[in-house]
Image (tube, rainbow over all chains, first blue to last red; front, top):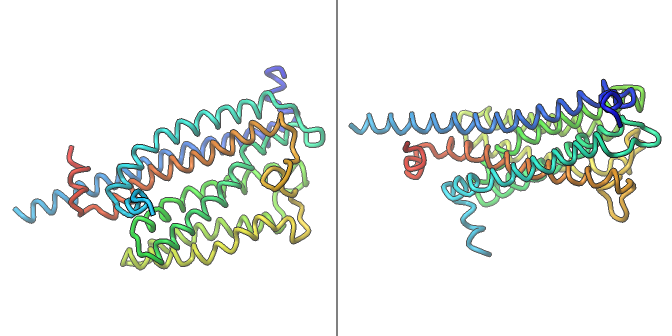
Length: 57
Length: 244
């Protein structure tokens, strides 16, 4: 398959490529979202610990 | 029962183990998905009837298998949480829900984009499509119910109950193409006996399937760390973990 034929996907490019793009987008979103969730939980835990420390003092 | 099984109920143990497993699972997933997509999109011959449109299966089939597997996994974790009152099990169920929902959405959109050239329509109220749409609503219901209560433990229990009840939809999705007249084709590879797909098309599909499963494991580990930390933020072990 040549490069033009590959991108054309036998006339089905407008169906195939959006599927691939969405799949890659969802894979990336999952990693980004999970990392952000963890970072927020870390920040929230650090805040809670700092507050508990200041209350004790 | 081995001791590692009991340790899975311990939040600090799960937090540490998840950090250890996530990069390996994601690296394996990355390699398999890249191989599956490159081989499936560029080197596999076109289908004799569907032409190149069939290549959508390299994302659609793994996403649909994962959507159902993630729900079953979430329901099992929810049941464990309800029966044995293990807090980590509720965290696992909570972590699995958004991942499963995103892959259910991917299944529906890719199926719709495949349906347009093959069936002549983006959507039909077909048993397989409808039951998959119900799966998406179940995921949304579980996620919404969990945060709908002021008391997080009540939210966990309510969401877990819905997850367990909703698992009845899983066999309906799988057997919908057998039980009813369906536009959707029957099982091609996820069935007993010889797969009804040529080997040249099958191997990249297997790679992509396994890659998506490993990806679920890796992202679940990442998300579970956040979930456990959020629930345990006042625990002593968190102080050690958060300390810079």
